[in-house]
Amino acid sequence: MSRTPGELAWGLSLALDVTARHQMEEALRANEQRLVSIYNAVDDVIMHLEVEAEGHFRVLAVNAAFLRATELTIELTVGKTTDEVIPEPSLTRARGQSSNTWSKKKPSCVGKKHLTILSEQ
Image (cartoon, rainbow, N blue to C red; front, side, top):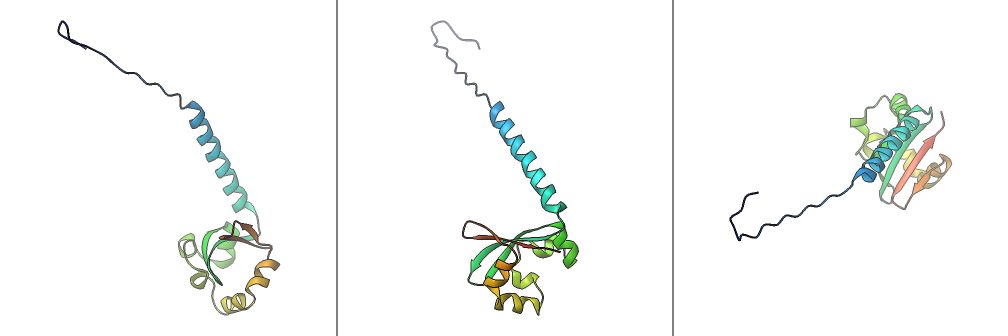
C-alpha cells in the first residue's frame, strides 16, 4: 500500500478458525450417510409421513424395501400424498382403520407432525 507523506494508512485483519465447524459438518454428513445406509439395508418397508390434516399424510421418505415391494420410484412417492401413492382398495382400508392401522404397524412419532410406518415383511 503506498501513501503520500502525512496520509493516514490503516488496515484491518480478521481471522476466523472454521476448522471445528468443518469437522462438525463432515461428521454430520458421515452420520447422515450411515443412517441412509441402514434405512435402505433393512428388509422391512419404511414410509416416513408428514401429518397434514386429519387422515391426510404426505410422504417424506421411503426406503429401498418400500420401493421393491410397491415397484414405485422415489419420484412417484416422495412429496406426494398417501392418496396419490397408496392404491385402492388399500387406501380406503387404511383410512377406515387409520389410527389402528398405524399403531399396529409400529409407528414412531417424531414430534406431532411426522409419523414413520414400519411394516414387517
